[in-house]
Amino acid sequence: MNVTHTEAPITEIEVDAVVVGLPADGRLSPSAAAVDEATGGIITRLFERKEITGKAGEVTPLLAVGGVRAAQVVVVGLGKAEQFDNGAAFRAAATAARRLAAKERRQVAFYLDDDWTTPQSESGVCGAMAGCVGQDLYRAEKNRHPIGEILWAGGDEATTSSGRIIGESINLTRRLINEPPEEMYPESFAERAAELAGTCQFEEFVVWDEKRLKEERCGALLAVGRGSPRPPRLVMLRHMGGAKDGPLLALVGKGVTFDSGGLSLKPSDSMKTMKLDMSGAATVLGAMQAISQLNLPVNVIGLMGLVENLVSGDAYKLGDVLTARNGKTIEVLNTDAEGRLVLADVLCVAVDQGADKIIDLATLTGACVVALGEDVAGLMSNDQAWCDVVSKAAADCGERAWQLPMFAEYSQQIKSPVADIKNIGEGRWGGAITAAKFLEEFVDGKPWTHVDIAGPAFSEKDKPHCDGGGTGAFVRTLVEVARGWGG
Image (cartoon, rainbow, N blue to C red; front, top):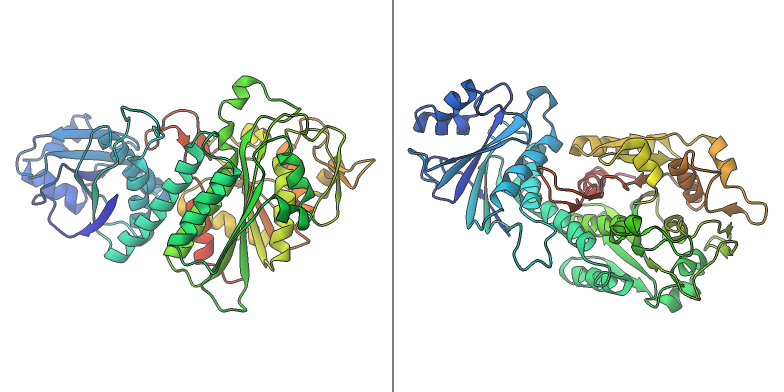
């Protein structure tokens, strides 16, 4: 998908469609005003008659409009001005692009950002790229047709370029999540990462196979993968854009490419979408692509632990005691609480690789979705200042996150009488937090923030700005953290 900056007047550009934004107060941007004047006040009249309201998510196509060379004008609602942020810019552009992508379009020009800030314009480019790509990977008759060329007016070429890079990374993450588990498993994910490493300037690309994982004492991760004929992998990418001895940021992703629950078998309905359980790893890979292609002057390592959690005669069992990389023993009381076992070893690797601060992302608990809903990620941390950095980055991107407490009392729930810790808490209550307290045992006191993306990583139904399936949530947040990374 090509993305090009344009400064052509909106009424003169010959494309399949031009897109203008309209806020809920009806104020016309210069581009919208130019269309309005050229068409004898069509936007103003429709707004006065309440045929167009400017409500967020509203899309109104105007066909064969005289005075404009484009085949159609699309008016997309921007919502209330006081609520407009980078996330709203992303969703507005994505909503318009998604509507237009119902048919094949050679060129579409977006004139949304006459008064937008640079971050809003960059977010809009990302949204336009994401909105026109669906989850219909294997449909003969596609639901979405990626726009051949997106022309972006306003901002500058650098903003358009960075928006394109991040947009491509969001779509990479979505593609990985949307692939069926028969196609996306530990080895094939590692192969996709290798392809990416061939196009990006990473300082290091390493894959640990089963033999290396055993040598590296990753006993918790290996146990989860034991029930599958497809062996686990650990993928490591290192971007060294900063000083050689500069601080290192670690991004860690859970990559359970399919989760049956193991011997604690999930019901069929709960298993239908479990290809999404590698969303944390997919998010880290997408962010690493963007960080490399943006050539950010920072040092970042991306670590992805990849397993299938299946049932077989060799599957790990309830009552097993596992030894993690850092030597801690873990009593297994639920094989469906497997993501934290995978992350335990990968977090230890991040520490051993010299990470100064860590962010992990995982579709870790249904409890987090119960607490915060499907659109909000849970943040849990051992360091308030570091959590504040991650929270601010998410807010700046318009991605929703909310911090949950990490009181010491929660740690008591994961104490085991037969091992150092157990892999579940006591009963249903506080499950997202007890899972985070488990992870805290493996970061060796390093500043660390856990992001539970079980809700926002995957949408089971279409939204105005996004087809159902993988959303690419929190790729932008990770890039934003990396942009401000200073140790």
